[in-house]
Amino acid sequence: MNTFPLALGIRYRQEQRMEDAWAALAEAVALEPQNPATVLAFAQINYETGRPAAQLFRAAQRLAPENLAITRSVALALAAESKADLADRLLAKTLLLHPEWLDGHKALATLRTTSSDPQNFARSYEAACQAQPQNRALRLAWFHTMALTKNWHAARAIIEDGENILGTQKAFALAKIYIASESGEAAADAHMFDAVADIQDVGLDLCHIRHCLRGGRIRQAEAIGLRHINAPSASAFWPYLSLAWRLLGDPRAQWLDNHEEHIRIFDLGFSAPELDTLATTVCSLHTMKAPYLEQSVRGGTQTDRPLFFRNDLAIQKARSRVTAAIAEYIQSLPPYDASHPLLGPPRDQAILFEGSWSVRLTQQGYHACHTHPMGWISSALYVSLPDTTHMGTAPAGWISFGTPPPELGLDLKPYRVIEPIAGRLVLFPSTLWHSTVPFADGERLTIAFDVKRPIAV
Image (tube, rainbow, N blue to C red; front, side, top):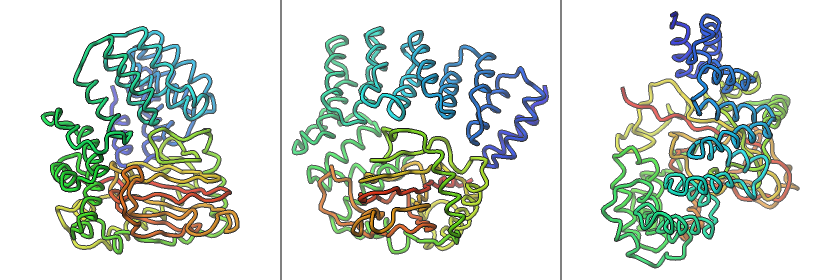
């Protein structure tokens, strides 16, 4: 067995040298067309680089028919090739045979949300729970899916039905606490989390810190966040520590956010024809009808697959300019500070992307307030914008930094709002709260990405 081309392709993929990886894996599959790992790796690199991949995944599926993850990949590739109906049927059929398949339910719910049936997107969970009423993990996955939509009535009914069937359980108690907290109905209850104080769980602590901020218990919120700053979960808690410190007048808010130095604007030097070509290319990738449930997009769509991995000249030119700007941003950062989420990671490593995508917003579209826990440095690259007549009165359509999520009810003003200009790139820490102000009409097309957080070696 000649494993060298496969190993080389995997290494190039890790280095995000996608075309080199594609060539190595093409050689590997030519040498070993019956090796499931090789065929699957080649299918995956085709999918990630924007090439047709459904038939390649089907070939891998024939070699490993019991691997449900490959079935999911077939469905994702079919949807990417404008065959969402086939993808839906494949997932639905497989779930009839394997109702306990959580990743399959999630994939099907996402597909239906973004393409075909946003009103009844989670019905596979309901059918599966009827088939396997004792399956607690399945019921909880259904609950979490409905909670993403903030459909608290449906989420509560799922848990109550679970208790009727399975009895009182800690997981169900936690779910009810989540509903009471995130719905805001128990914001004044300072003791709601006392009964679960012995449970060590990142998700529970995130719910708790938000509950404390919503209820004005700022010191308690700070204490929760401080428990996580030296843990792998730190990136999820830094944004809430920022809010707590700002409300307390603590100078550590400025140390953490330092928006004067940590937010930077770059003109990438695109010509008007280059921007037109990029806009046409990126717009063609917006094939979904609605946004992902878990994303910040409201009134628009987001592309699938890593945008900067696509085998497209206009996109690769944009990636090259973006990478140069990121390098300049990193070089200009304030001095190294091991305790800081932006300033602590090493700065001498290759620039890699944690994710890259495009967002297309239309009339009254916006981004809800959010951060990027998986990233180190985040971004907004403006590709095309409505004219000033359609955008509306400033700051309509502008990006806003530092405004807290409105559901927390905190009286904090934005640090800064920045006007979008075609060809402009804004870079900022992934821990910084940001959102987009709704605009009146037209199309607002952006590219966004997260830079992967370097790890000291």
